[in-house]
Length: 165
Image (cartoon, rainbow, N blue to C red):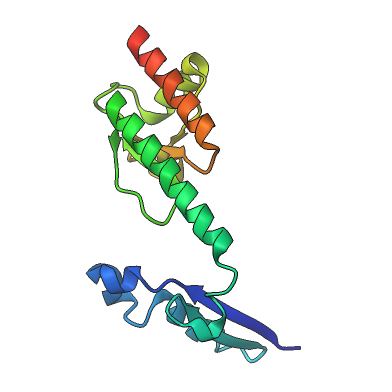
């Protein structure tokens, strides 16, 4: 039985970012497809956003609405966190914001996250949890794949917490 696979990629980052383009001159999707194509039981094709013959332009209403909602959530969260003193990092292609905490605390990320969960009622993710070395340990992640009302409520809780200190 042959497995049919379509490797999809926007093919934007490779064109816009020289470092990524140098690694994947034909796109990440092509590198993945080339590896999969070596298997005798896999039939592979690629599709990018600019290739409507692959059917990617159909039924795009939902992804476009979702993208706009997530971008708005990101912008609301980013502005609120920046106002509070977090050092918000640029964010593309994910639904997490990474922010530095050195202007807010001398604590390491785990202790800071535990304190905000306990005392402010807001959960964030210590970035060091993703690294075997335990560093960097002065950054946290916030998810914005939530309802905007929850993001606004979380920002209000954080603002109230930091003002009370």
